Amino acid sequence: MQRKKFYIGVDCEGVSCVVGRPGGSLSDSENFAWAQKQATAEANAAATALFDMGAEEVIVWDNHHSGVNLHYDELDSRCSILLGSGHRGRFPTIDESFGGVLFIGYHSRDNVREAALAHTYSSLSYQYYKINGKEVGEMEIDAAFAGLVNVPVIFASSDDKCIAQAKESFPWVETVVTKQSLSWNSVISKHPKTVCREIYDGVKQAAARLEEMQSYTFAEPLNVEIRYKRLDAADSAKLFDRNGERFGFRDAYTRVGTVRTIRNLF
View 1: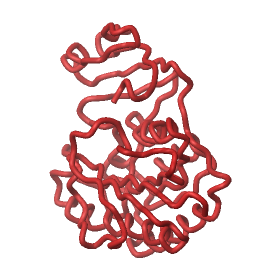
View 2: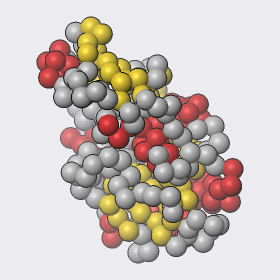
View 3: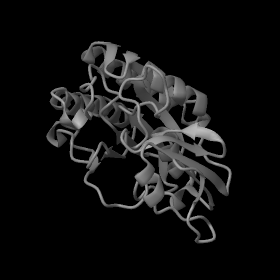
């Protein structure tokens, strides 16, 4: 292992035995305490595997909602932890010295049928993001931030719908399926301990294959189309193109524009 620094992005919706509550967000549901506990365990399995393969630095990024979700004292004490909100962009401080990024507990993009807790940043705000004509989710956008500094995506774990999305976008990555999605709030989940074992083994395999891993990028400039779920949200969106002009309208719900890089969107 030549590059010995890694960044683990941790969300909560895609971890095992998590379904949330109909009509509400995961963070407001009775399932959330479990999601926090299991997201911590799955992130820790990934971090421990990296250290066992020779990693010298692992940053665990708590990125669900406001960024204060994990049980930090239950993570491997060798980890550094990024928490909270207010920083610009995704994977803050990442640079060319990192060997890879990992996605734990992410979820499908919105607009995917029968995908548990699927959304793109906000289930209330956005119907879809399209970049260069392709619908993308949080995984692709986060991966593209890492790709700006040539850091590859090496691992992803989530439900079967999200992993299908990951394999389409990053066919080289190691993956673990945590559960089978049946609907927005229904899954058949693997046992949590089984998932942690599989993540540990999968991350070790990913670390052994670093030379095969690739970074993910969008061709620049980016042609962006964002469809909102509310007319007022579309109308008030503060989006500016590469010329400093506000994004135009494709229709009342959809804003379109061209930006130089993914950094200009987030």
